[in-house]
Length: 92
Image (cartoon, rainbow, N blue to C red):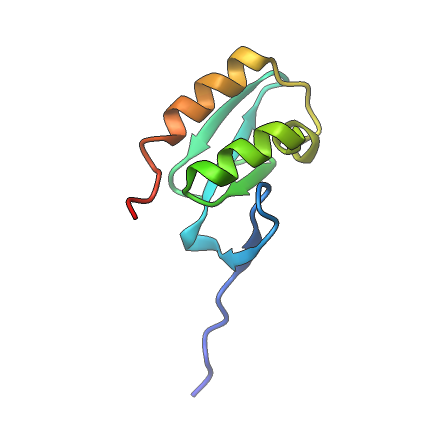
């Protein structure tokens, strides 16, 4: 019997490769707005983040989200998305 391959993705904050299901996907909606893709199947270019505060702040500091999505993102839009990401933050 074949072993099912687990899709791996890289976190934009810590740059670690993890299984896709463990990460949160952020999708570019238009040219200047973002949204969180809870299903992982939305159309468009996406970037993945670990569900913890350290990765959120690292990605924001490195401007990794805008660079990986190839769009310019305002500071207000980033702050809005990061506030929304706190709902998904892992409880350790």
